[in-house]
Structure formats: C-alpha cells, structure tokens
Image 1 (cartoon, rainbow, N blue to C red):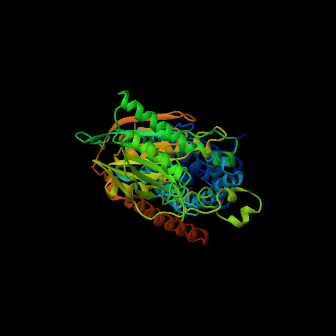
Image 2: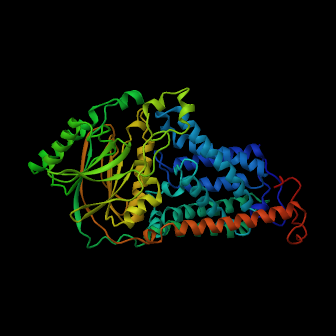
Length: 544
C-alpha cells in the first residue's frame, strides 16, 4: 500500500507544497528514481523529449514533506537514476571514470536538492523551483569538472519549444521546461492533498495547462530570418576508424588519417566527374590525424595530397605536440597549414587525467594519455571567401559561452569537429547522439548552419532552424555535402549572452535566502504570522 503523510484540512487542493504531507520516505525515493529515469529518457538515445517535463514534476512530488536529510536522499536517488545511464558510454574510457563522474554529479545534485526542498515552502514556489534548475545546471557547467550533461534544454532539440533558445539561450529554455514540470508538480500536489474536487483542482490544472501551452508555443516564434542570406557549398568527411575491441587497440590504429585522405580523394574524383558540386570548404573531424604532421613528414604529405586534390580549403582536426594541443587547422591548396584553433575546454579523463598519480596505481589509462593537453584561450574565425567559420571541438559544443564567442567574433557558419569512436567501442551511440542534439540546439540558438563532422559518425549538416540537411550512419566512411545559408544576423540570445542565466540565478539565490530565513524562524518557534485556525501542520508530516 502506498501511504502518504496527513495534510492540513484547509489546505486541500490549493497546490501549495506545504499542504501535502508527502509520501513515506521509501515511496519518495522510488518516485525520485522514476523522475531521474524519466529525465534520462528525454535525452538521446531514447529521445522522448516530453519526459523532460516529468522529471522535475516527480522530483517536486518526492521532495514535498521531506526532512532535509530525506531530501538529500531523494536528490541522490534522482541524480544516480539520471547520470548513471546518461553517461554510460564513458565506460569505454574506463569504468571508474564513469563511476566517479556519475557519482560526483549525483552527489552535487543531492546536496542542492536540499535547496529545492526549502523553496517549496515559499509562495509561488514553481517559479523558484524552475530557477533552481538553472542554478544547478550553472554549477555543473563550471564545477568540479565542468561537465554540462543532463541540462533540460539539451533534451529539446526536436521539441516544439526549442526556439526559445534563440531568445535567451539554453538557460532560458531549461527554466521554461522546469517551470512546466514544477506546474505539473503543483497540480499533482493539489490532487494529493486531502479529498480534491474539480473546484479545488481547476486552478492548479488550468495553470499547468496554460504554462505548458505557452512554452510549447515557442515553435511559433519568428527567430530564423535567413531570407536573402548568401550561401556556401560545404562538404564533411567521415573517414571512419578501424573498429577495435578496446581503447588501447583503437588508439593504436594508424589508418585513421589515410581513411580521411582516401575519402577526400574520392570526393575530388566525384567533383571532377560532375557527380557532386565543388565545395567551398571541406571539414574533417577531430583527430583526423593524431600524429603531428609537423613531426611526421609522411602525414604532412598525405594531408597536402588530399587538400591539393580537392583544390579547396580543408579544416583538419589534428593533435600537435610541444605543447600537446587538440586543434582544428585550416589547410589551403598549394600553401599548406595556416590558421589554427586550439581546443579551450578539455575533457576530464580524456585530454587530461585528474588524480593521475592515484589512478596510475590501478589503471593503464594515464599511460594511454601520458601528457595532458594544453588548452587554448581564444575564439578563432577562419575566413574562406564569404565564409566566416567558427570552430568548436567535440565536448565544447556543450558550453554556451564557447559557441557564443565564435558567433560574437563574427562567424556566419559553425563547425563541430568530433571524434566519437572512443565512446562507441561497445556499440553505444549515446555520446554522439547527445552531442548531435546539442549541435542542433546551437544552430537554433545562434541562427547558424552547423557542420558536425565525426570520425565514425554520426556526422550531420544542420540548418539554422535545427533541421538535419544531411546525415550519416556510424562506423562507416561517408561524404556529406550540402548548400547552407551564411547568416550574419545575431539572435537575441547571442546579443544578451549570459545575462538571462545570471539574472535567473541571482533571483533564485535571493529566493533561497528568503526560504532559509523562513525555515530558521520556523525552527526557532517564531512564525512570521499566526496561522489561521485549522492550518497547523499535521503531526504526521515530517519536520523540515
């Protein structure tokens, strides 16, 4: 039997969190797990985006009536149910990298869930709870390893509300998704409080429906003014990687560069035969060569051969040494390498090894990456005729400020160079599909076409409205080509930058301060106002 705590008599149906005494802790924990799993399923590879509303709603229901200690437990259950499956592809790097990162993310979420429990005591708490989600995502984007997976906005790449990102960026869309979830939670609490009637439920239910309708109506926003923009013909090369059974075997493969050279020579032959249009620019993936061409003459010669054969500029993903850097470098026919972009946001356990000495005592992962990469520090825009190309590499697509900095620097086209092979060894496609979803969000957010070039797929060419123009499968060689608009218009999100995020976080922190003060006053036995008769908290409810 599912049991609930008793609720106050006069609070029935009001939807106030305090009017529902809450489920017993064991049921609250199960509801938390259900909420975390629902939110996981909103992301690729499941991609059931409406479940992004269910996650925050179920967390509200689970936290209602909880003590602070039990709120931590519910937050931990939710966080583990979300992050363990969401980043399960990281097991291909190392099982402990997956375990540590998922555990740390869940632990941070659990601590912060105490804050949401406090916010449920406030009037108009759904707005505060929505702000709490933006605060939590802002922390996860920056600390401790800067790993912004699991953001509500990034589950909405194919949803009708995605256009809100062009207004206020990913933080605004996360806020709106969380607001719908909180309003659904508000309606659920009203239904759970006492013996509800349609009269008592009408307000909360209508509020939830109207909120959801307004958010989903974002698809009607006119945020894609591409008419009259010049266009460019693009090609993306997916050379493929020899599929290995483990990471060390895959990293030792030397065919990767040759695969991309051969695919580019095929493209050149097809262009010469008139079967494909001549591209204005060709984009190779991250790690198209992991041998420094300046230290390996044969690699340099192969790249030069490919570039001269196609006769067009080629952006090549390279690993350069002294210091070790992950770069996208532009090669010109007849000239060779010129400008390069150095990856700024490095991947923990991939491009640098936290706790290297400790991990070396039980794993050979540090030996596979003996030298940590050195990050870059600035945006770079490549000028290729009328194209102004902004580049981000792999994991960087998840970071608002990095993508925005390329647009601010003048990019009218964006590239995401990625090497997804390391995360697909066991057949999982979650990482590449999640990053493709992020790339689609970035296209809408900036109103720029995006070329997502991957070594093993999926590779995509994305229109400014987020639609897929061309895409490949995985673990195969592929050549993508498409004509895309070069939009110079800057969306409101690009112009206001981090402003909406900082405003939401500031207001949420004020709300948390207010909630904390109310909680302290309550614990000291000095309520802000005398309660009306019959509205005292029932003894069956758990204390805050």
